[in-house]
Amino acid sequence: MNFLTKLLVLVVLLCITGLIHGQNLSDVYKLRNDILSTYDKDVVPATDQSQPLTIETRFFLVNIAMFEEISETISIIAAIELKWTDGGISWQPGDYGNKRRLTIKQGNIWTPPIMLLNSIDELRPFEGEYEFMATLLWNGTVEWGPGGVLNAKCTVDISKFPFDSQTCVLQFGTLGLGTEDVILVTSPYQQPLDLSFYTPNANWKLESYRANTIADFSIGYSVFVVELTIKREPLYFTLMVVCPTLLFGLLNPLVYLLPVESGERIGLSMTILLSYAIFLTLVSAAIPSSSNPMCVLLIMMVVIIFVSGLIVTSVIIISALHHRDESRR
Ligand SMILES: *[C@@H]1O[C@H](CO)[C@@H](O)[C@H](O)[C@H]1NC(C)=O
Ligand SMILES: *[C@@H]1O[C@H](CO)[C@@H](O)[C@H](O)[C@H]1NC(C)=O
Image 1 (cartoon, rainbow, N blue to C red):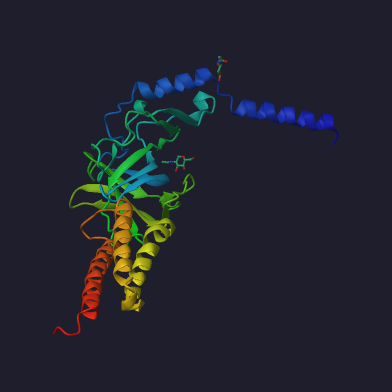
Image 2 (cartoon, rainbow, N blue to C red; image 1 turned 60 degrees about the vertical axis):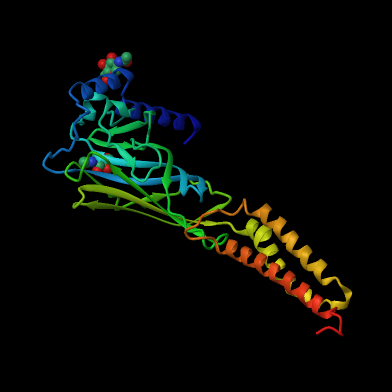
């Protein structure tokens, strides 16, 4: 085939596809009007109103913005993709120039009020004020993916700091719509938690994650549970806190190796005690101050300073005994 024939074939192909997908803007306006003129967005649009509406959920983790041990909160950026069949929407693509999908703002149709149930902010649909786009298919399938900042309560166990990992559970539910209205499920074909848009955090590594839906008929709510386990990157704290602490702990007993005659014992043990106290004031701000349970490292530091004090006392007593006047008893 020479170049001209190829061009001709291309033009013919373009014409045919142009005829098949002949939708123009007035088709789309007409479609939107036809769909929404009889639509009521206050009603849960289950096709069979004796059955709850099944909503497929999928969680997209975007990043872990912040984790605070003291206030026990985790801030993440995330989106949830929801998919359901709206009984009030359907059209024949042939009537609208073969238009098979329509993307409109969420405010035009019914959308489920998905809320983070263990939020530390007020309970409200988590897309907030922003109106996300919803995609409608000709057979009634609706796809909608709201997202935003989520601040959740997360019980923190700091005892193994800085080698700790924390597990945070995010619970999403449709408050106000019970299992008789809406059931949340996960897709059988796709992973319920997706990391395609994930940006790693420098201080926290995502160790494991899980997502699942639970329909609790006794409480009457269907909940989408996302579990994230994050592990602290310990290098900084190991270098800046753990190593010096161990060093001070080892340095302390070495005082006894000095000969008593040299008179340096008291000086050295006092120096260690003082420098350790200064070190403590510097690093204690970096260690999460939580009492239940308390950080083992912090307990170790307090023990070391206590032992330091005992060593100073013992060194003074030993030296006093050593230089005691031999004649006195
Ligand atoms: C759009 O297409 C329809 C037929 O599908 C046609 O009747 C109408 O005139 C077209 N409108 C415009 C603005 O081209
Ligand atoms: C509607 O069409 C989409 C794509 O063609 C399909 O995945 C979906 O299962 C259909 N929904 C129903 C209720 O038939």
